[in-house]
Length: 138
Image (tube, rainbow, N blue to C red; front, top):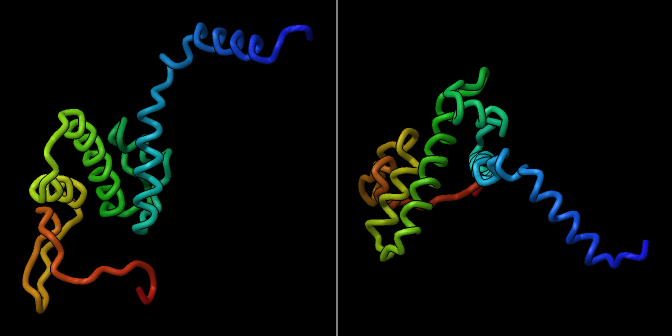
């Protein structure tokens, strides 16, 4: 044990990098699937990360999960991927860009709403004309 900790860590890191593990596992993809799964869970989705992996990679829907839940997950994944592409182009952030992204998030699960303030369609990314609350009682 005469090696310093820094040298031991450096050697372990070199061995890890030489193993090629990072080329075998797409960590960014799994990170995205985790973000999607947990974000949609906040909205009530019960689809698990494993179910999302099958849905996204193989096109296999999860038994016992509603189509709406699964489409919510697909929409959010697609919106994230599009957002990554858009941000790589260093865009000007405008209301139109925000609406474009909002439309992707709600593409398959959004709908038209009508209230005293007017009508809007969340599947088109139109801005809400009503208050929003989360959970029971807001």
